[in-house]
Length: 629
Image 1 (spheres, rainbow, N blue to C red):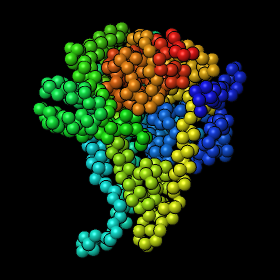
Image 2 (image 1 turned 90 degrees about the vertical axis):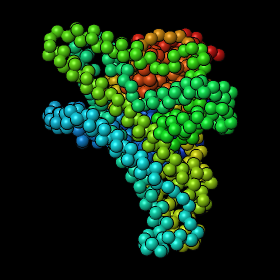
Image 3 (image 1 turned 60 degrees about the vertical axis):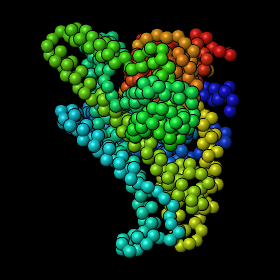
Image 4 (image 1 turned 30 degrees about the vertical axis):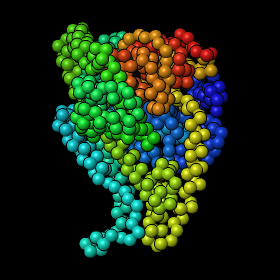
């Protein structure tokens, strides 16, 4: 589909279904299936799809596109990630704490893309009942936060180490004698099947840890935000975040390792090897021969585990490269740091300046409070928010990066088993089966191995995988509208507000945008202060990161934490999705770059080379000059 046709498709699908006096987003039932994607529903489980039986319910809900975690059509196996947090995140809000005003977040896959819908509580009696449970349970966690967080880290590491221990190998021609003479009574077929079960269980275990404390972290920030908005009318979200910024979080450690390695390369006089050899294999070979190269390589290898288990995406899809397997991004970052060092520039984050601003802004607003009681409440909320904030970001390294990157590598090992037994031609074919289908295919493989007969899967799965690949390719040409269904009366779910940045104002902004009008001004969340005018670089795939030029404005659906090495080279950032606690917002604040997030249509409205102005103070992105149009 060419750019014009793609744009027109977006305009048709995004157009409100009712008159402007009673605006609604398009009904999820009215969206057209992209040409060539007929039958796409077979890629996904029945419970993830909209259905005529629930039309009244599904049309009456507000759905927004989760381009943050799944910007592309979801592969069947990859639904394990979305299905995991569908339960794991939702149960924390609805059943475990429970949060007084919020239930869980519902999911539907529409034309291959994930749409989600927060559920709330409106009954005053139920809110009061839930408040009693929440205060007691959340209070326990807040009072013992540091100790519980320490326990959490150990649980997460243990889960990761058990995942690493799972290994998949093709079944042997003849069972090893060890199985016989040790009288185990179970054999290679049992081991393969139970390892698959452990793999899936391990993912769901880590998925549960993921959300154990996360809702509370966002909830604490929301409470602080609400206090500030009441105490200081007109205060901006940006000013509020300034009071908790500047915390040395683990998620910046991989980038810090790259800076350290760049400094070491300069010290050992091997920096030119990095600069002169952009291909990782060539650089490593040259470094082995250089004086001082062995010392640098030792430091490099030491940094890789765990810090290079870092996805260039958000970790929820198998297709995003991981640093440890694709060294291009970290090496590109190190080259940039070496060049900056040679220019005499500081390559560390401006942490001291951020901390100074944090202290100054906090004291200025504290001084405005009229009573000791108000100041005591303010101090407590500031302290609590700063305490919980590291988990809000650091969990991301343990879960989505370290754990999930290893998880995808284990699934590929299993793909090799299917290739060895003639089920697939490529290890990547494994991702075109849902996890339940994969269990069936695995058992079919065991049947063939056990009986000595041809498994049906050897002729059954290839045409299905080929068809699903074509369907997904067709789905990738469709641009999902940012929202569908009925605008919500209120939004109270913490993740929806803080992570995705979906508020009543966001909804009204989207309702007011006509994508066919080609306007030159977009609005979003003012995530990081400053104002910059520069050329845009639109990134819709992590592979395009290598095209970023010095001083450009990054325009993307959402950034990943592993994109941090790119931030010293850009002048501002704009993203389609995200709130004040999205990674784009946090990274921009820590690097002192202007940023506007949650814009909605940035990547479909702006093109690479357009001259744009980013006003991170007001949350406005303006197109000053369009190239080639």
